[in-house]
Amino acid sequence: MKSLITLAVSSFFLLPFSFAAAAPRNVILFIADDMGQNAGCYGDPNAKTPALDRLASEGTRFRFAFCTSASCSASRSVIMTGLQNHSTGHYGHSHAAHHFSTFSSVQSLPVILGRNGYRTARIGKYHLAPEEVYRFDFALPSNAWNPVGMANDAKAFIADKSKPFFLYFCTLTPHRSGGEIAGHPLKPNPFGNHVNYPEIKDVKYDEAKLTVPSYLPDSPACRAELAQFYQAISRTDAGLARLVEILKETGQYDNTVIMFGADNGPAWPGAKTTVFEPGMRLPLVVRSPDQAKRGVVSDAMVSWVDFTPTILDIAGVKEVMAPPLVRGEPEGGTEGKAAGKKKGLVKYQFHGRSFLPTLNGDKLPGWDLIYASHQFHEIQMYYPMRVIRTDRYKLILNIAHQLPYPFASDLYASATWQAFLNSGGSLYGKRRLAEYTYRPRYELYDLEKDPDELVNVADRAAYKKIFDDLAEKLKTYQQQTRDPWFSKYEYE
Image 1 (cartoon, one colour):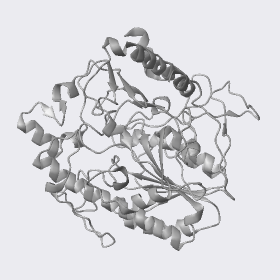
Image 2 (cartoon, rainbow, N blue to C red):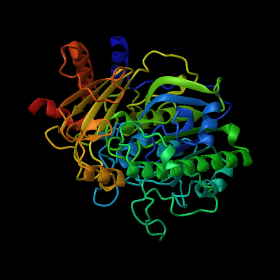
Image 3 (cartoon, rainbow, N blue to C red):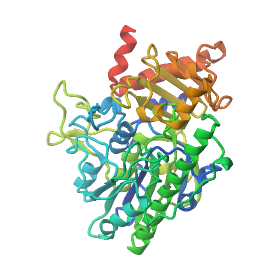
Image 4 (cartoon, one colour):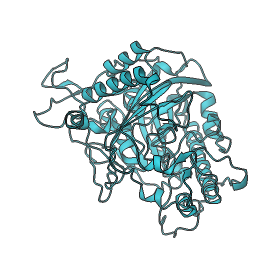
């Protein structure tokens, strides 16, 4: 395992892999909001997701796909830049008082594609800043709570064949609605299903028949919220179904790569905002006209830093050149000493790599390791964490472990969490409340023996060699990616 880990650490800036295509393909990146591997094709016994299941049968389903930060805005910055957000300044939410923003030196996916002959558009949730860094040609107006309506509103853009296109399609489902939607006051359903849309034929779920995930408490309040959550997932799936219909109606289906993912895991304590598996292990289904095999299940470990390099690979963009940085300016992912200088420009580097070589499901060396990096969710929620995860082990570094673990406002207010607090219980799902709130500096989990991440073996003698190896590799990665929190090794 050592050689593979070393490869991933030392060469996370890899040359792109190219696949055979007659011309640059269109790309649709469909990002659901707060959705884990809650789909039929992932074996979820509750979810009814025929469109996503069909897409998986025609493409590739990744079993081990991970966001780097289980927080909406921060995760989206990684998706759109191919960089860990600790190196871009986009440490948390961009909206309202939180006001986190990406360094102006960062080269984003839509800007690079626009320079290379693509029409670019976004529709639905944006949640990025500043706009000049994440500039699209078009911001298509739509209601992000209505995924089917979003697809219809994107039809004219999809139908235009003047250039290849990139469409960033971001539903608000299945996020908690948390307030009013288009003037409709919030009712007992907090997932937006209380607003009816004629385009959507809702799928209802029986609370009593649901299987409750192991990280959640099996309570009436939780079951009621899960039924609403899965209804919102079925709405999301209906949007995907309509999007595929439109691609076929416009003659674009066989010229378009479709990627389906999510920004982070479900909006419950124990998932969203954490780096436990329910928070960061997410769906990724890719359907390409050019892949040789269909209905593939890939065991390659991929990360959201890989989205930008992969999409640039599809677009045929072999390298990105950018102005060198002024001394003292935030790095933003470029390297002033990089090779390839010409006309005052230098080669721009990403923290991810193209995962196109893994689409056929072949077991390739070097795809058994990912990293994660979380700083904030809301601005009040300072709790930086770093993660290295292999195909068996996960090491978590809680940099601010002296602090109690913070709660996102919507998760704290959820009926599930409030019912748990009112019950006076000590176990939330399988995890003790005290262990959820107060965490040690390091957590090491043997996921083969302990998939629920309940037994921290960081201090056990039997795991010392594994701990030392992963801790050193994580530290090296932080240094290589210019992590501002690297200095904590020096004075704490």
